[in-house]
Structures are given as structure tokens and as C-alpha cells.
Length: 179
Image (cartoon, rainbow, N blue to C red; front, side):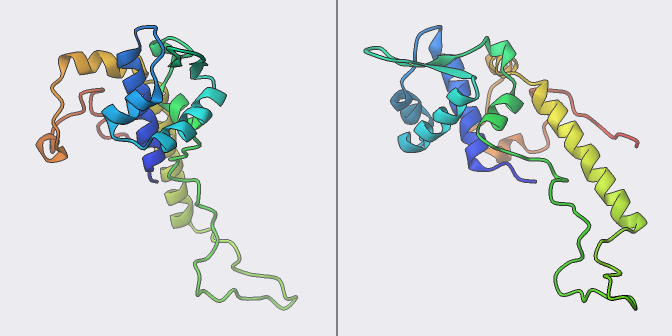
């Protein structure tokens, strides 16, 4: 369960495009300079974003990129999906014994414990599948427009230490959920 730099940079670049476009194309070089992201890396990301239909390219003098849809129609999940980011915490839970565990065989030579199927495993798997659903819903319901509007009223700190212990400026804290 990890959001890589690919996903973080894609969202930052899309927000930069949202803030600086005003309907006019924005060059990747400008985004690269403002966000301190390699131009080559941005080119790779925007190729995927264009294929995913969240941005359009404009050719010629004054060309660059614009949003393919309204900022309120592009969710953070759309952006992450376009660049191939998968942050589902349950994606690797397969029930296979960990390495170093000897697989026992029955009299016929069939594997006895080739798959873990205990109540602890099933409870853990179910918990992380639910967490993945909540995360996907959160990402799907937060749009570039939501983030842009929130930035107008919030003072962002340059260091994460200043934000320690504060509530999210995007959404209220989810709180405890009973299963």
C-alpha cells in the first residue's frame, strides 16, 4: 500500500495545469520549472494522461496541454489510474504461505497447506479489502476542482511537520468505522 512518486507527481502536475491553464495550453517546461519535476518524467506521465483522456495536447506555437474535461469531472482516482498507480492495500493478499514454510503433503502427494485459510487470514484479508474500498471511494470523490477550491481558502505549509496532528483540509476525518 504505497503511493509512488509517479502518482504524486501526476497529481501535482495536474493541479498545476488546473491552476495555470485558464483554458489556454500550458507547456510541460513551465510545469517542470514550477514543480521541480524532470521534463522527461513529465513527458512520460502526460503521454499516459493523454491516453487516459484527462488531458488534451495542443500542437503548434502556443501549444501545450489542457484539461480534457472540467476540473470537477476529473477525480484524483482518474489521474492515478491513468498513470498506472494501484494503491489497493489488499492486492497482494493471496493466502500463499510465506517463504521458508515447508508445504506438507498428504498420503496422495497433494499439498495440504498450499493456501492459508484461517479465520485470522480471512479477517485480515477482509479488513484490507474494506480499507481499499474506502480509499478508492475517497480518491474517486475528490476532484481537481475540490482541491483547487480548498487551496484558495487554506494556507499550505512547506513542511509536513507543521501539519502534524491537523485535520485534512480536503475532507473531514473519516473517524472510526465498524465492520
